[in-house]
Length: 143
Ligand SMILES: CC(C)(COP(=O)(O)OP(=O)(O)OC[C@H]1O[C@@H](n2cnc3c(N)ncnc32)[C@H](O)[C@@H]1OP(=O)(O)O)[C@@H](O)C(=O)NCCC(=O)NCCS
Image (tube, rainbow, N blue to C red; front, side, top):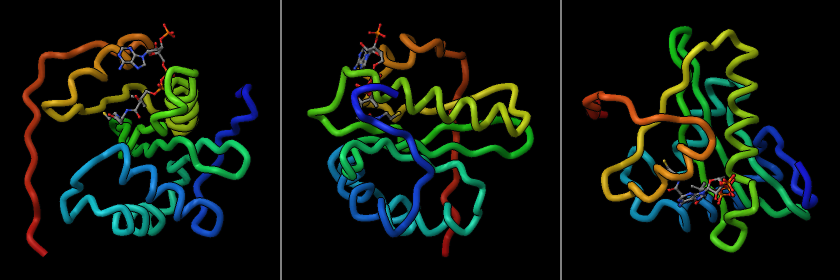
């Protein structure tokens, strides 16, 4: 994208400290199973090439994690540094992940927004997502 921002596949050597700093700023109070180091290591172990960073002058300024299970694509960890927002970086990250998911055969993409973060609904609506009538459930698996 423009503004000297490039979207790149994540790699530990160049991006690890930057993405951890970004997530610590953008997502406060991560739970144990969402600890940045653990999330990165588990995503790297899957090796699906679906973790991306936005980089400007060697600084990680944005991130997106996608997943595809053969049925649905999912988006996670969409984040941009506060002083880099409203410049199109978030939209470019989502578009990049959408393309990567589409290339894998994905036909539908879902995402969840935690209660209390409803202000980002406008962001997703601006880039074509709609609210769907679903009840979201989950189960934390004990170690
Ligand atoms: C959500 C987030 C990634 C958006 O990143 P961004 O780089 O500012 O987004 P963009 O500049 O690409 O915005 C794309 C469009 O969404 C709009 N938009 C961005 N943030 C918005 C908001 N909070 N409310 C309403 N619209 C918003 C922009 O105005 C733009 O619309 P336009 O194309 O009509 O001008 C960023 O605000 C963020 O990191 N938030 C904290 C982390 C977070 O909550 N992530 C989402 C988890 S589900």
